[in-house]
Length: 427
Ligand code: IMP
Image (cartoon, rainbow, N blue to C red):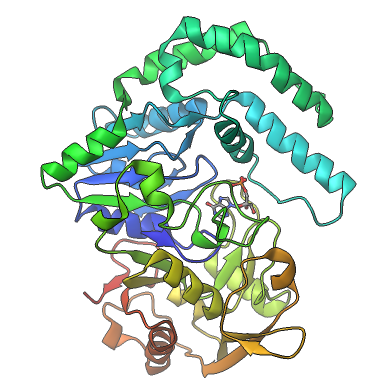
């Protein structure tokens, strides 16, 4: 399953739903920048690194090699789950080849964002400051990286950190960082201790996943962030540093593309974005405020108010195309109750007047387009108690029908509220 917009589509709820049908749940990209909220009864769980499948007792959750793991955050998450009676033991496996987010990555993230804010208008990305970009940058640089398996070898970790810490310190100084400093020995000790605690969970997840496949188990790949934030295919440079589309699955897990037989794309019935970057259908008016209020559109990870706008089907169609989506989950349809009219963007008008149905995965060029809308009649009824698609008001059904027509993909799941029960499943 994969998010088709700029994140926060309500993936946590769908992953929770789909988890019931699978044996193994896998995170293949991103890190603690993701935030999945799952509501079970009166309990609300905000998960960042651990797959939401952990809330089930009979599933194995895997943090695969494509993820960047912040061991401090991970341990906090494990402890918070245990404090609420959720078992975290053999049911959580972490790749020994996943890269580690170190404290200095978070400092670099913060320092780079601050210097871009100061130096160049419109260049800061508005990251979550979880150290994601700098950790992936070290992975690509290779020599400067620390992987989860390295935490299990304290002496080697100390030697590595003694070598790379001065280089990272120079980088931080160049970014104007005046905060905490890196003490390689103290860091080695802290992270070796984290390694000891996490050791029972650390394995080669590639072989583990292939063993599961060989035994006939079903695997759910849980995409974090969303495809329009994909490093290669999103609205670069206002993207995250991983491959969040389904294209990240083979590299991030070692499971080949050919093993994937169903792709559930998650979309909101409208659009939101957190952080900077182009957003063609953004509404900076009362309608946008109303969507934010009704949808409680504030970030799970950072608490930031989300930017809100009309549904952009040019963008979603592009995401369906690159991800190979076979069915859709349309989330938060209930938020749109009470509007006289609803608009969906079907085309973009370019600066020279040309109209296109093609997305433009490039921030500068996307900023120049004007959305072309189709207007549909709204519905006044609240729909949060509806139990099947046929029970929705006619105009809500029409809205979903139009989405299917334009995208050419069936809507398999409709969500009309945060509870597990407020879900209309059509397949
Ligand atoms: P980073 O992933 O912290 O480097 O942030 C890069 C961009 O991606 C920023 O605009 C973030 O707000 C956005 N972003 C990263 N993860 C998520 C997510 O899970 N949901 C929504 N936006 C995200």
